[in-house]
Length: 414
Image 1 (cartoon, helix red, strand yellow):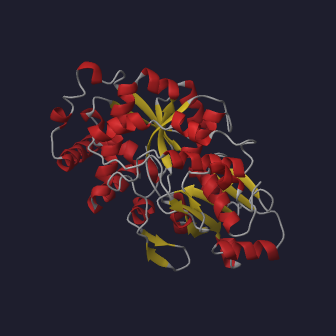
Image 2 (cartoon, rainbow, N blue to C red):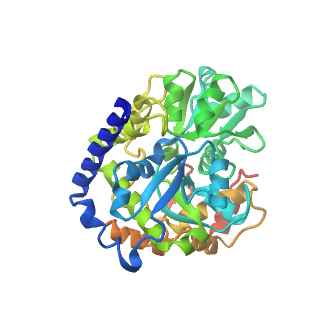
Image 3 (tube, rainbow, N blue to C red):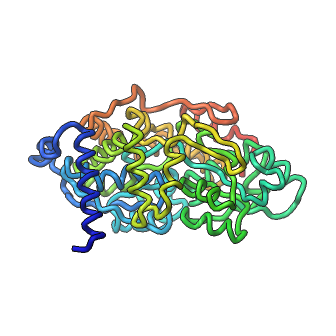
């Protein structure tokens, strides 16, 4: 056995011990209920795809800490290169589940942004923690925020290029919403391209884009590398917004409902472990920084995960609405209104030609019954309603009650 392997194994043992300590009960005892009888997972080893982003953490930690085994499953995290790759492998069955963009799952279910297949959202993995980065070149000309960008684009006419990570995904929707709220029509006033998250910084470095919206740690990485500034965080756009989800196909849930429940419960517990303490967050940052996961320096991850922000131009602040993985269970419930919101934006930007039956689609995709079972198993609190209300950056309230009116009500659209 090599020294490196010994070190990795001993580190895993330490982290597993920490997890058991945090849960306060031995894994053997916890798994008794799920190891026998009709509750047993039908498939005991599952492959979960992830993209190298900080918000893959609860998937990775459920595996590294051995929390998965408490629920009778073994999670094999699978590092993927792009969201399109994640989509294709989910649809083909090569991946059982994925850490995936909320809007991607909805897009596939409706046949936009790729092949059409019945899809499922089992839980929300995180709230908040993405950002919009503008190039240092733009910042030097005064474009350090939304109004500054709008002013520069009006004064210096040229083709401005902005990048998101997938056409129907969360980052595309945050970018478009933010630009439109600042009077810029992303479809008419700029060119929008799709770039995988880990390639954002390199593409900005060589001048391929003026700005991008992506998850961490790539916004902070652009600051560390001196090539970009943070113009806005996504929690500025929508406080406690839904972000990545635990996604799979409708077929998988029908065939393996117990497995779906067990994996959801394990990931809920991993999210609780991350959010439980400062030391857990630091351990998480050290773990996922490894080249087998996010492949970056720990300092690119651990600052923003603790709410310590800087914009790359000398401004620093403590953000109470940093990335959260559990927040006493408030993060994880697959609210129907959250899924419906992405559909309203798909309609707004011309990705959907007609209004879908918003509520019916959300009920088809968001697996509320399985989530509730997983919440009971992991002792996760449940909300009173399947819908929630939020006020976004422009003062517009979204509550899911009249999605057609909401989608059609924006002045700036495709």
